[in-house]
Image (cartoon, rainbow, N blue to C red; front, side, top):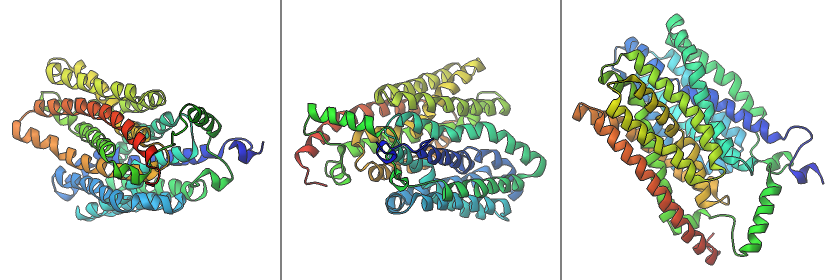
Length: 433
């Protein structure tokens, strides 16, 4: 049996190098966009004599631009162009954006940078990891996606303190400059020289394809009409499952944006800013382990993984709301619980889509699901603050977020039920391709 037939090269399977390169891009380019952003807000606001909301508006532009990109071109280009081009452009845009921020003479330049970051992260944050894993690996996909997405949390945990120190010692401009150099010097060469679009580009097959084909053959004997997945046209022709998948993705994204308001919540109930920062760090660290745990569980049960991801959030928010003012330990407990939920969006949403629609048109279908995620995040990033401004308390926001978590579970179960009808209909209408 040849190396091409087995899907294994002599030595290490090449897909691992592609996967590692993508993980590095997540660790640097993607994390520098999202996971270290907040450490700059105060310094930049002071430098330009503007409010933090004015600084944070660039992040709204990141999400809004990513939403537009996912809607119109990110997905189709991912299908048509070499992945080296896609990843190089994505990392290049982030690197240039960081250079612009380093040299910005007014806050408006941050808005320009936000648009560039949104264009790059339309691929980086939502599409690259699940697509690469789906193309190169046919087993342990859930765990691999979880590890890939966890790279942003690892980076935030390790590098946020480093760049905070640089801001204190050398200024925020130097910190942005160093981040830009890391992205352009490390990520770009990896994207150009290491990454390949598909196993076929190296004369290989996906790792684990033998087991996948054996499972498919067994299923075919038991159910001769069973197909491998749903096409994009089939998903749109019978849209209930697709709509429910988008709703689930949207709820997960709105729910996780509560993360941005925990430091404010902590100070609103009488604790100091340092405690709020520790709560935020606890959530980030918990999300790292959450991505690994949920990724592992996804390979065995989509439902169990989401129960483990969502139920602790409901319990944790309730404990923070009811007992947090009396004992700080409840705040840390809630932060750990919320960190696990924070992992649902990057780790579980791609696997839910794969479960609902299979592999045939997964890349194309998921790009449309990905449109909802930055849009929901853009809404959520202001929604919770708006509730606080109206009520003077975060209790209402916490209650709504708990309801959102419960609704997400209900929507997930409903989507799995409609999946059965969708697949049965698709088997009877193979002409719809």
